[in-house]
Image 1 (tube, helix red, strand yellow):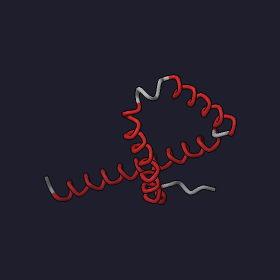
Image 2 (cartoon, rainbow, N blue to C red; image 1 turned 135 degrees about the horizontal axis):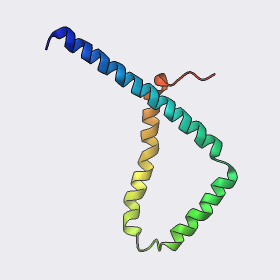
Image 3 (cartoon, rainbow, N blue to C red; image 1 turned 45 degrees about the vertical axis):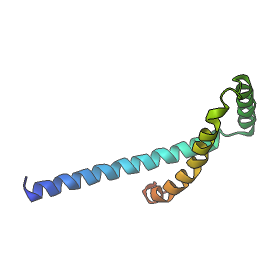
Image 4 (cartoon, rainbow, N blue to C red; image 1 turned 90 degrees about the vertical axis):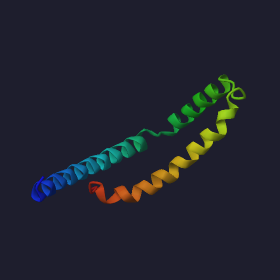
Length: 96
């Protein structure tokens, strides 16, 4: 393959990756805005009651062996999101 053709393919692939990253940034912004709008105090309290009922109903002692690994997984998610956010910041659409 000739150098110019290869260079053109790489440039096209880089443009596609940039477009996908821009699209992902827009989707994250929409998801964040939707989440912020939908988190009303009544929904938070209601989901807490329903979650507590379900946890009590599924007999947590029986499933307690998997709980430490689940807690480690859940505590690892916020730092991951915080690490990704500055990387996505320049790719976000400017807000008015």
